[in-house]
Length: 178
Image (cartoon, rainbow, N blue to C red; front, side):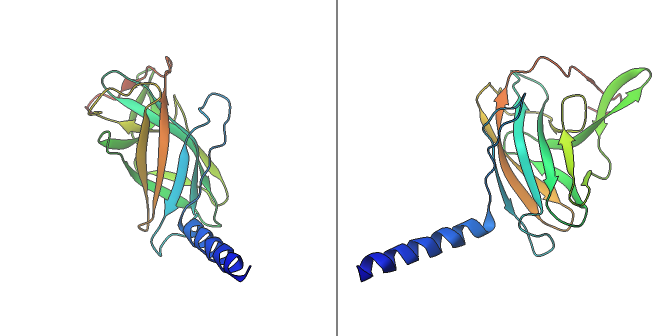
């Protein structure tokens, strides 16, 4: 009996310690796949759970640029800024949509994405998004891609997004950018 109790306490302690540096969120919402995990790791400049990535997904593409979308949730009492994104699948840029010469075009987002204290920021087709500039291979529906968001102050947020087919968001890239 004593041995079982010691083993149970040790297992509980290991589970608690393992949960300190990461979180999972696989909630589904309309229009996004139910898959997608988030984990957060940060330096002392940013709390471990400063930012949560909800409902991440990537637009499937056989070639050319594509984008990743999600809802970024700030779990702190201070603004959080995403200043860059990386992925092993492609060089990345943070993008926004603007009106130029009567047409909506995408361009790099200067200053990054600011998520207000206790608020959220939507990355969506036709709006702000994470741009995969030159994927190294086709991104097929069902593929899982990993990403890292870099926060001002040195923190990072890792997450995985599932690719899905999406016919919308056929925006143009702003002239002068390639």
